[in-house]
Structures are given as structure tokens and as C-alpha cells.
Image (cartoon, rainbow, N blue to C red; front, side, top):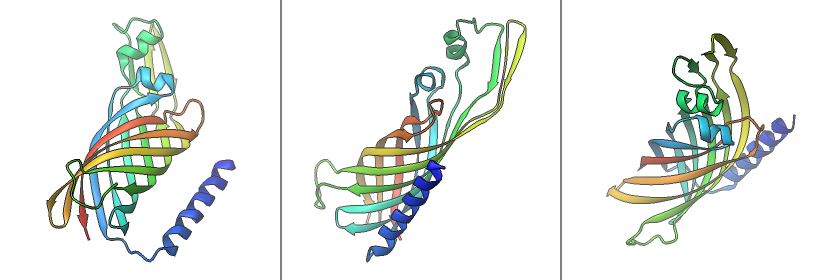
Length: 207
């Protein structure tokens, strides 16, 4: 119930903020990249680096600030070797299938560039939050002559997001960007695979 209340509050707050602005959406962006699992410990230990893809829209509040609304999908595969090693079971002759982590996220981020003028290092910063549906897929493990099945486990996660990036003008209406973010689950269940670092390359184009 607390998650529902927080999501409702977040949605109302975001909507009120957007409606109160005198701006219209003026850009869209798409990105792809890799993601590094960070926490909880089992997520860091047992899952491999994953991939992420996403896109969204934005509007400028000033020459050096903007609000970005995005949707992203991230996937991490379980490492058989690291998983069995953690259980102190030899991976040879044993197997596990499934258990990929899927994360579908909606984010609202504030983007700030220290200067609107051309600069040697075109850096920007990101601050905001994610609402995520995280799930660990169903898995089947065979070890020591035994078979164990684990059903899919979905989790709802609210995360804080901070990030940094570089942007490069490629034509009058389009920018190429490279960015890294840290996704920190602030409201989550202990077993939710929620903390990770996506590193993306993307394209932003004026509408």
C-alpha cells in the first residue's frame, strides 16, 4: 500500500510540475548501452553485465537546463559459474537456466549544463528518479542429481538517479551524447536486483 501512495504522490507531483511550466516538448532521445550490476551483493556476485535500451522526450527550461522523461529496458543474465561457485558447488556437470533479471523503468530527470556556451568539455549532470518493475525470471537448476525450480519474482522499486555525461553537436538539430548514471533503489525489497550503473551512448534530436 505504501508503494501505491508513493507512486500516486510522485505522479501528481510530476504532472503538476509539468503543467505549471510554460514549455512544450522540444526534443526526443534514444540510447543504447551496457549496465553493471551493483547491489544487493548477490546481484553483484551472480549476474553478468547486461544491456540497456531506451528513449524519451524532453523540454528545455532554459538554454542550459531541461527535463527528460524516459522509458528504459535493462536485462542481466545469470552467470552459471559464479552462481555455483557462490554455493560452493562445482559448475561442471551441473546446470541452471533462466533467472535473467529484467528491469522496465520510467524516469523523470533534470538535466543541467554548467554553461550554455561552447566549452572544451561539454559536460552535463542528471538528477531525478525511477519507477521500476524489476523481475528475476523463472529458473531451473540441476545439481548433484537434484532438480530445483524457482518461479519468477517481480518487485516494484523506486530509485534515485544521479548521472554525468558529455554531449557533442553533430548538426544544427542533433547531439550525440555519452552518459553514465547510478541507479540507487531507495524503496525496494531486500532481494530486489535494483542498484546498477548504465553507461549509454545516445542521440538527441530537436522536434
